[in-house]
Image (tube, rainbow, N blue to C red; front, top):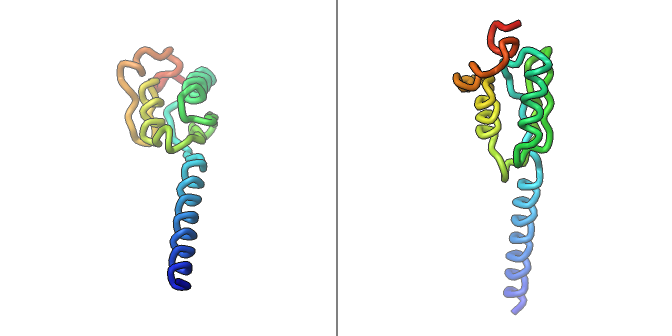
Length: 116
């Protein structure tokens, strides 16, 4: 009987630790610095507005000096690849993912490559 109680206690403790670890992993936001082809304030506004209103993205801010956008997101709601795809669909490159050509050509001239 004593052995049964010990086994049950160990099993309960292991399930409890496993459940806590999974919960912590889901609640921690993903963080990424994504290199873009953004060039100006208009680009900054466009990228930040789109990302900050994208489901699963908690925060996005573009540094125009480095052309990197800092993105904090919930990995259980959106993947890093999906975040990059949002940027690409706006007409900007994102960490080697090429910009959507049609969207890039629709950008104001100042936002297109070589526009500044």
